[in-house]
Length: 450
Image (tube, rainbow, N blue to C red):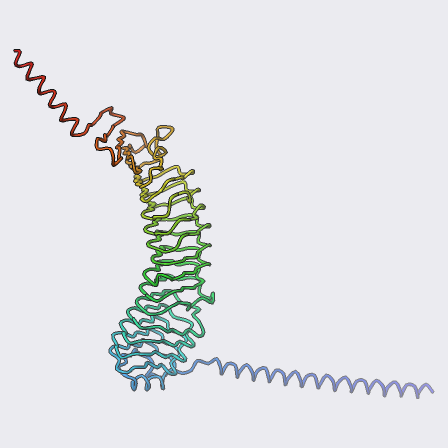
């Protein structure tokens, strides 16, 4: 009986051993197959990622004169290791065909016959994309383009269509001038955050500019486009220089720093809202904005250049710089200001010239400092309303040297100038005439008696 049980246990053990061995073998085979498949997939992926060979014909720059020459090149090359230049091109259509990458520049200029530019596969221009003096060009189609170093389009007066299907994700400079484009949204998707240059000017039909750039390191200039143009740069935080001219709306609510000058000139909007702006490294200029009446720059503490606020007809109060403490240059205000309040201003390194057509402006805060020491260090203060003009000379410590006040009332033909510090009265020429006459008569009688 014991032998029988022993044999049964032995057989069971052998069976279990064989079963486990088979399972392990199957697992090893599957693992091996998996490894082989993985290796095979990796090899296939590697094949896919292997750069396409570049023909020797594609390893130089070309000047293209006609469509036949371009077709031969595009049939042989997917990459151009050099630049393509179209100068005095004879055909109406430029079709880059299979060309995907241009290592240099793409330049099209001085070709009156070109009507259309097609780049169906072009995704990268490592240099400049320059279009200049193409007077018949109407449309550009860039289905795959996502990377270009610089766009410079100038004097393409009937260009009205630009198609960025994929949208730009990498670019450094944009200059678009003298076109018939109605808008620019080439990088509104948010992928482009920094530019060196953003210059949109003299595009007479351009009504919208939308972009999500956060900083412009050299030049930001938008001017002389359609009067109705609306500019949205809601994510802009920092700019080196910023000039906005001839626009109907500008939105930059997150702008914090301008490294050099900030200028708003001849615009058609009624308000400027820059609540987060903290400092301006150069000049602040607001000039000839005829309907401008409301401004928020109340977070600005320093302007390291001058402050020029001139010829803004509807701007009656300069009370929008409540945090301003220092001006590195001078002050020049002209217009119809009734009130000027800069409550935290402690130093102006230049001179001051204020000229208002309002008779409500009180110049005394500039001309009669309570302590007798002015915050102005530029040597001169000139403040005038519609009735009175006051001029003050100062030394470099802000101490008043002399003061002259002129009555500007147009109904008073006998206005006088009083120099308070020197105590001298300068009369009108009519008064001086009377004095001379009386003195002469007195001398005549005195001599006759003798």
